[in-house]
Length: 119
Ligand SMILES: [Zn+2]
Ligand SMILES: [Zn+2]
Image 1 (cartoon, protein in one colour):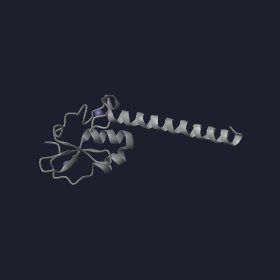
Image 2 (cartoon, rainbow, N blue to C red):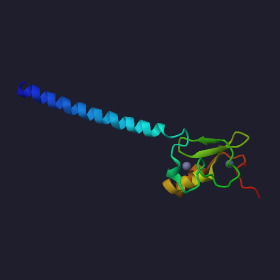
Image 3 (cartoon, rainbow, N blue to C red):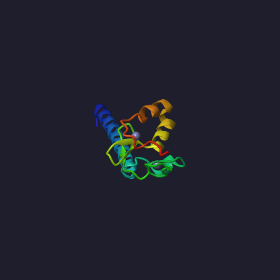
């Protein structure tokens, strides 16, 4: 094998090796995501011990209402009138990971009054 050919072969082997490494990484990522139920997009250990709409709903009036995940990551609860109300446990989680201001913004919604605490 000429020197040039050998260099070419080495370069090819290196590229192939890193391509294989990328593929393995990608497969690992896909496998770890397949592991998660759909939704929640996290495991119970990830949110423990905080209240969580999926694993540990706190005692609020919407805890048994259907859940809907917004693209923002906020989980909403749908009332009998089809209106989505922010889940308080999801808002608390957003406040922890993205700050109070963001959580406040996510909490703004077109409310029909259903999520207001009972007197
Ligand atoms: Zn959870
Ligand atoms: Zn509401």
